[in-house]
Image 1 (cartoon, rainbow, N blue to C red):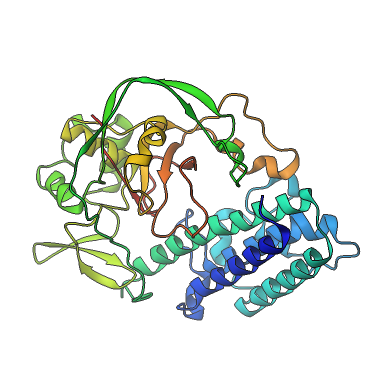
Image 2 (image 1 turned 90 degrees about the vertical axis):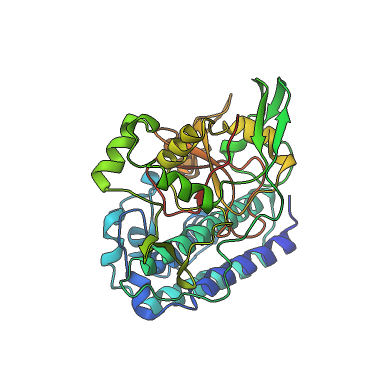
Length: 386
């Protein structure tokens, strides 16, 4: 457990970084919501602030004065326990409160949190603060990828920043790592922070397998496209094949064919696809189909966790073949925090690792991200197993 003084510094550092991510935005960018999965930047700024006000300040600070009575309705995300909220698809209709008022809200709550934690220290409060910090870090990743989707669907494909390297190249040669069969322990096993879905450390039996030490590159994925991968029904799940045809999917998200060359939109604007960079913004359906085409498969999340010490990871969230399910003896927290992970354990696939959008000091080898099989706006890629 982090000491309270350094935890408070961690909190302040986290709050500042969220606002730093928004600095390149024009005021008009803050309210855009192109699809239901993408929330406007202004909403992220408010929601991460509401979390601290709702879970820490309101129940623990005597005579705490709420910044605005309407903000719980506006910035609650999915916590049924905490009352009514704006429908998710309507977040882009919130032209009010103004961006300035949301920033005023952030600064008001941040100041109240600093004042409170300077004077109050106990394990329960520290635990709440720590989960609030990591909740905001989760939203930093969502904020960055939501900003990319907002700007990437602007017909002008504007530049967000020249400073982000979205497409790092792995410098080592591809090799297959052999993992022997056996019984392995899975799950979080230290005093450091984790989410409840990582707990319930348990043993699994794993058959022998080989896993690639590199992610699939754009050049490999271009070969899949050129070979007709999006036209061969036998490579796809039935649901995936329906998704491809219904949505006319022919390439990863943000890819464009211009003058017979593949380009993609990035934070640096439109540029040619780097053949040596790991592919990203693909769905589970596409990852599965590619693996089928290559005659291999995706790793289970348990295989990934056992093997991860033998390869580098963290630049792409990696699709696994595992359904998002509870570990043995999993139990949800009491109250609203119990809604954080458990109620989403259905119709989702586990992603492992992290991405270039993941904030520092947030991911770890036992981290279990999860998304629906058709979603692509996160930095999702794949690693093969045979």
